[in-house]
Amino acid sequence: MLHFREGRSCVRYKCGLLNTIQVVLRQRPGWVEVKDEGEWDFNWCDVGWLRENFDHSYMEEHVRINHFRNHYELTRKNLMVKNLKRYRKNLERDVGCMEASKCEFFPCTFALPSEYHLFVEEFKRSPGSTWIMKPVAKSQGKGIFLFRKLKDIMDWKKDGTRSEEQKDAAQVESYVAQRYIENPYLINGRKFDLRVYVLVTSYVPLKAWLYRDGFGRFSSTRFSLSSIDDKYMHLTNVAVQKTAPDYDPEKGCKWQLQQLRRYLTAKHGRETIETLFKEIDNIFVRSLQSVQKVIINDKHCFELYGYDILLDQNLKPWLIEVNASPSHTPSSQEDYEMKCSLLEDTLNVVDMEGRLTGKEKRVGGYDLMWNDGPVYREDVNLGTFGSACFSANTHLGCVNDREKQLRRLLKPFPGQKRM
Ligand code: ADP
Picture (spheres, rainbow, N blue to C red):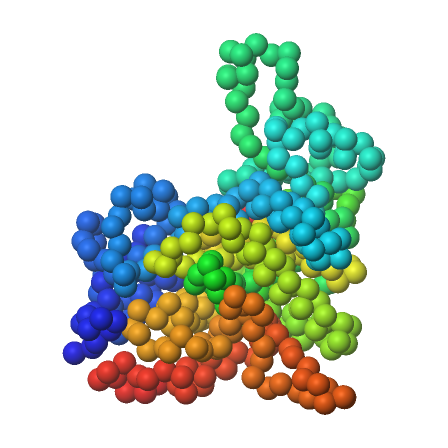
């Protein structure tokens, strides 16, 4: 008989998704699926379920669910930028310009139609530049297009000349207009972005974990600014690239982060790439801090975010967006294995089994990145003058010897042999 938190004999889970997470939950020793209205201890739901049910659910102390109630404050494109802009302004007021400048990692963005006039002012300041229009609540590249002329976005102009009736009929979807990164870092002439996983187990205090693995998502067509209508060239979403006429399912369009970090290190040297990865860490922490006071903190909730980061030719990382429901649908065997490990380790950190002490800095492929303040590595080096030289406890794109680490860390489930 297994014993979990509070002496329970199993974890009753509910799962609203039909992909890798379903497989991982099924295989977990002592976890039992409940269907329909059955009572659950753990729920991996989609955001639609959350919207409909969260407010009417009573949750006992030990229960866990995979989203925060208002997760969209970070994961909807317009709200993310609104929160980041406010955070930057507050930093400038309270701490100064230097600190505020550490938030310059998102491209200039306007919400349309509400900020149309502000957008036009900015647009006119740099004639000829390229912008990207994105529906705020869609994903997988749906509804996105690039433009260089105002006439291409006339539908999103606030039109004072229309009658109320016409306005209603012409209700336009909310979009963001964002400066297009015109100089992406290219490998073999192709653009890519990074998909990185961050797990938040609490907002107050902020506790965030960074997964070591992730991947680069490449476009299948050589990059050029001469044709802005080719989505296979400009959008790196796998959902888009999969439909490209020359897409090769064997090869896919992904590089593992380890491979990417090695490539970049060989090309630019260790120090430069360490600085780049530090800047990427800064993006995770600042973006989470920007919503820390807005997200309704709830001890039952955790969230596995999928961050999209784009590098430009100066090796500056840009935050493109944060996903609340990063795809767990695998695109290859390697991808499947990575996603299974990611999800297993997410469950290990959430720890329904009660096997952790709460003081861990590493659980499998996750490193604790922020715990109400920066987290440092155990191996403190003494600097030249004997002073300790701390480095952050993050290992993005580094070796992920998770199984070895888990064997050391976790007691086996009672009655189960060690891995
Ligand atoms: P979605 O939620 O539909 O995936 P994203 O904001 O992630 O929307 O954009 C889709 C893709 O478009 C990104 O993966 C990236 O390749 C490209 N992209 C988005 N915004 C920009 C930008 N400002 N500059 C350059 N490329 C961008």
